[in-house]
Length: 155
Image 1 (tube, helix red, strand yellow):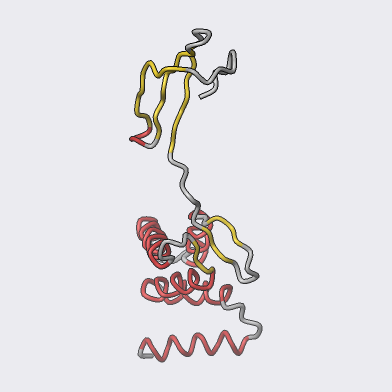
Image 2: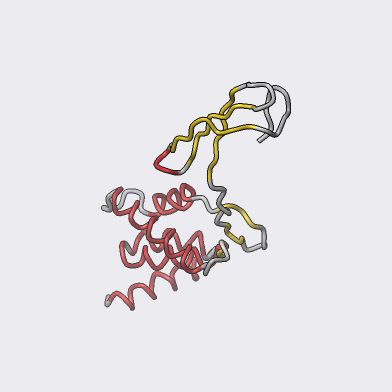
Protein backbone atom coordinates (compact mmCIF):
# COMPACT_ATOMS: atom_id res chain seq x y z
CA UNK A 1 0.00 0.00 0.00
CA UNK A 2 1.42 3.39 -1.00
CA UNK A 3 1.83 5.92 1.83
CA UNK A 4 -0.39 8.96 1.10
CA UNK A 5 2.21 11.21 2.77
CA UNK A 6 5.57 10.19 1.24
CA UNK A 7 4.61 7.64 -1.47
CA UNK A 8 6.67 4.78 -0.02
CA UNK A 9 5.39 1.22 -0.45
CA UNK A 10 6.87 0.03 2.85
CA UNK A 11 4.31 -0.11 5.65
CA UNK A 12 3.15 -2.34 8.45
CA UNK A 13 -0.35 -3.14 9.62
CA UNK A 14 -0.88 -1.88 13.18
CA UNK A 15 -4.48 -3.07 13.63
CA UNK A 16 -7.18 -4.85 11.63
CA UNK A 17 -10.88 -4.68 12.37
CA UNK A 18 -13.87 -6.31 10.63
CA UNK A 19 -16.72 -3.96 9.70
CA UNK A 20 -20.21 -4.30 8.21
CA UNK A 21 -20.94 -7.89 9.27
CA UNK A 22 -17.68 -9.11 7.79
CA UNK A 23 -18.09 -7.43 4.40
CA UNK A 24 -15.23 -4.99 4.97
CA UNK A 25 -11.89 -4.92 6.81
CA UNK A 26 -10.42 -1.69 8.21
CA UNK A 27 -6.62 -1.66 8.58
CA UNK A 28 -4.57 0.94 10.45
CA UNK A 29 -1.14 1.15 8.82
CA UNK A 30 2.12 2.89 9.57
CA UNK A 31 4.61 3.90 6.89
CA UNK A 32 8.03 2.48 7.69
CA UNK A 33 9.78 5.28 5.77
CA UNK A 34 8.19 8.37 7.36
CA UNK A 35 6.12 7.04 10.30
CA UNK A 36 2.82 8.46 8.93
CA UNK A 37 -0.26 6.50 10.04
CA UNK A 38 -3.20 5.96 7.72
CA UNK A 39 -6.27 3.76 7.30
CA UNK A 40 -7.12 1.46 4.43
CA UNK A 41 -10.33 -0.50 3.75
CA UNK A 42 -10.69 -3.83 1.97
CA UNK A 43 -13.90 -5.27 0.63
CA UNK A 44 -14.92 -7.94 -1.83
CA UNK A 45 -15.58 -6.70 -5.32
CA UNK A 46 -18.34 -8.79 -6.81
CA UNK A 47 -19.14 -9.04 -10.48
CA UNK A 48 -22.53 -7.36 -10.94
CA UNK A 49 -25.54 -9.42 -12.04
CA UNK A 50 -26.51 -8.16 -15.51
CA UNK A 51 -29.75 -8.18 -17.50
CA UNK A 52 -29.54 -8.57 -21.29
CA UNK A 53 -32.22 -6.35 -22.80
CA UNK A 54 -34.15 -7.16 -26.00
CA UNK A 55 -31.81 -4.94 -28.05
CA UNK A 56 -28.81 -6.84 -26.57
CA UNK A 57 -27.77 -3.96 -24.29
CA UNK A 58 -26.65 -5.04 -20.83
CA UNK A 59 -27.58 -3.22 -17.67
CA UNK A 60 -27.11 -4.08 -14.00
CA UNK A 61 -29.94 -6.01 -12.36
CA UNK A 62 -32.03 -3.55 -10.36
CA UNK A 63 -34.10 -5.14 -7.62
CA UNK A 64 -35.98 -1.86 -7.06
CA UNK A 65 -36.97 -1.72 -10.73
CA UNK A 66 -38.32 -5.26 -10.56
CA UNK A 67 -40.18 -4.44 -7.35
CA UNK A 68 -41.72 -1.28 -8.87
CA UNK A 69 -43.01 -3.23 -11.88
CA UNK A 70 -44.59 -5.87 -9.65
CA UNK A 71 -46.04 -3.22 -7.33
CA UNK A 72 -47.61 -1.42 -10.32
CA UNK A 73 -49.19 -4.66 -11.48
CA UNK A 74 -50.51 -5.36 -7.99
CA UNK A 75 -51.68 -1.79 -7.32
CA UNK A 76 -55.04 -1.72 -5.50
CA UNK A 77 -55.08 -5.53 -5.32
CA UNK A 78 -55.46 -7.48 -2.05
CA UNK A 79 -51.80 -8.49 -1.86
CA UNK A 80 -49.57 -7.52 1.09
CA UNK A 81 -46.18 -5.82 0.84
CA UNK A 82 -44.66 -8.89 2.48
CA UNK A 83 -45.98 -11.05 -0.36
CA UNK A 84 -44.57 -8.61 -2.93
CA UNK A 85 -41.15 -8.65 -1.23
CA UNK A 86 -41.24 -12.46 -1.17
CA UNK A 87 -42.10 -12.56 -4.89
CA UNK A 88 -39.22 -10.21 -5.70
CA UNK A 89 -36.78 -12.26 -3.59
CA UNK A 90 -37.92 -15.53 -5.18
CA UNK A 91 -37.55 -14.11 -8.68
CA UNK A 92 -34.13 -12.64 -7.90
CA UNK A 93 -32.93 -15.96 -6.46
CA UNK A 94 -34.36 -17.90 -9.42
CA UNK A 95 -32.70 -15.50 -11.87
CA UNK A 96 -29.29 -15.90 -10.23
CA UNK A 97 -29.67 -19.69 -10.26
CA UNK A 98 -30.87 -19.66 -13.90
CA UNK A 99 -27.82 -17.66 -14.98
CA UNK A 100 -25.67 -20.70 -14.11
CA UNK A 101 -22.73 -18.63 -12.92
CA UNK A 102 -22.57 -16.34 -15.96
CA UNK A 103 -24.02 -13.42 -13.93
CA UNK A 104 -26.32 -12.60 -16.86
CA UNK A 105 -29.96 -13.27 -17.64
CA UNK A 106 -32.12 -12.21 -20.57
CA UNK A 107 -34.87 -9.73 -19.74
CA UNK A 108 -37.37 -11.98 -21.55
CA UNK A 109 -36.57 -14.84 -19.17
CA UNK A 110 -36.88 -12.50 -16.21
CA UNK A 111 -40.25 -11.28 -17.53
CA UNK A 112 -41.50 -14.85 -17.88
CA UNK A 113 -40.52 -15.51 -14.25
CA UNK A 114 -42.55 -12.48 -13.16
CA UNK A 115 -45.54 -13.59 -15.24
CA UNK A 116 -45.41 -17.09 -13.76
CA UNK A 117 -45.38 -15.75 -10.20
CA UNK A 118 -48.11 -13.16 -10.84
CA UNK A 119 -50.31 -15.78 -12.51
CA UNK A 120 -50.26 -17.84 -9.33
CA UNK A 121 -50.82 -14.83 -7.05
CA UNK A 122 -53.33 -12.58 -8.84
CA UNK A 123 -54.82 -12.92 -12.34
CA UNK A 124 -55.58 -9.19 -12.66
CA UNK A 125 -51.97 -8.32 -11.86
CA UNK A 126 -50.88 -10.95 -14.39
CA UNK A 127 -52.96 -9.26 -17.13
CA UNK A 128 -51.66 -5.82 -16.16
CA UNK A 129 -48.05 -6.97 -16.32
CA UNK A 130 -48.59 -9.04 -19.47
CA UNK A 131 -50.14 -6.09 -21.31
CA UNK A 132 -46.92 -4.12 -20.88
CA UNK A 133 -44.45 -7.02 -21.07
CA UNK A 134 -45.96 -8.70 -24.12
CA UNK A 135 -46.49 -5.30 -25.79
CA UNK A 136 -50.04 -5.90 -26.98
CA UNK A 137 -50.61 -3.84 -30.12
CA UNK A 138 -54.39 -4.15 -30.29
CA UNK A 139 -57.46 -5.01 -28.27
CA UNK A 140 -57.72 -8.48 -29.83
CA UNK A 141 -54.39 -9.61 -28.36
CA UNK A 142 -55.47 -8.34 -24.95
CA UNK A 143 -58.85 -10.10 -25.14
CA UNK A 144 -57.20 -13.36 -26.24
CA UNK A 145 -54.90 -13.26 -23.20
CA UNK A 146 -57.88 -12.67 -20.88
CA UNK A 147 -59.82 -15.53 -22.52
CA UNK A 148 -56.81 -17.83 -22.10
CA UNK A 149 -56.75 -17.07 -18.38
CA UNK A 150 -60.50 -17.66 -18.17
CA UNK A 151 -60.11 -21.03 -19.90
CA UNK A 152 -57.25 -22.06 -17.62
CA UNK A 153 -59.02 -20.74 -14.53
CA UNK A 154 -62.15 -22.76 -15.22
CA UNK A 155 -64.58 -19.92 -16.10
